[in-house]
Length: 503
Image (cartoon, one colour):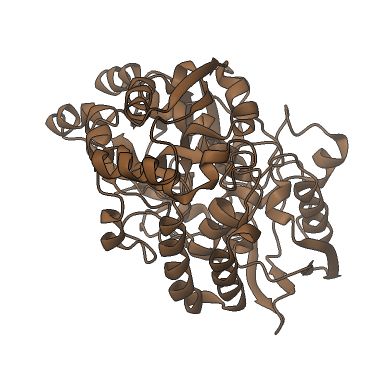
């Protein structure tokens, strides 16, 4: 399962309820006091191979160094890998490693440790898909490793930087103890004595760390608080310096003089898992998929359910980024008459019946979905599932209400949203759409910036094909007290500590 686990269940809970060296110039003499971070969810696992990218960022980035990091533009930058090169055919990735780094148990970080970690991540239930194209991991010398790829993978470095290259002590990996006893080389160590699992985690700064200027705070306290109202009140009382926020509280936050940081994080709408109509024949007709797109008023849903925190759009590529095309947002303007006409042309003037899954965390959207589809004659039978079962079973239905995380990297967006098999997209069906297949081929044949034009064409084509029914893109919002800056990163539901700075 891809790291896209962060995409739905984790993201829905949220909605329903820098460089390699620091950009700041903090010196040891004026290092800030402890920082208290309020996040939405408890840590899923201390083991990087089992952890979720979504809200685990603050926890894991305190303890572990990554091989690759991201800057504030989501570009890969050096960390424990000081540099990297691809072979001409881009099927061999060579990493030159930083020397002189030790894990907190005294083990040395070197090529052997990197190989052991990468093999551990490749075998991980959650981390493994990042390395799906990796066929071999080898030590070249003490400071060099190579990754052999079965095909060019333009998203690999991005995924590694997003949270899939944390390096742990090889001793702890061998002992299979990481899930409960984390050991890394990161800027902080976990203080069990001061921590209360489930309510507060305390991380103490190391006296020496190779990148200590990126981590200016004396100690880090991470408090999982599921209720945004409780987080807001905790900030009011001084118990938090940063909070994962509810957009409705933005005016009150500004009155307090707090910093407000927001950026798009997820798309909200209906995911079609049966675009070919193998299970539900009507969905195989493009006119039906287009009718459903015309029937929903995304701007109204953003305002009524999404609290206005986001952007009305029908695209899965983040608003404001290089692939996003504002002109395409008019392709499925809200038009119920046109939607009904398309249904009639497809041979379904009276609609059809469909069973869709539902869970408590999706109920804010349920009335609108029921009413809107009903106007097309589409009769929905809801199958109630627990939140945990929704993640496991939603994609076994031909269509379902979805909140899916987006990526700031265009190649990763193509991979996660279109071409690769995901829990939410078990049948990518690229082979069944010749133009989509052709454009995917053009994307895969290009590299770097040269990929952007064919990805734009691909974006337009999947909109033409009504690949899914996107209503809007929703923001993630963070409040921070004066003197602390949070930089949201699309792809991280909660930014890692690299993006939480004094200033």
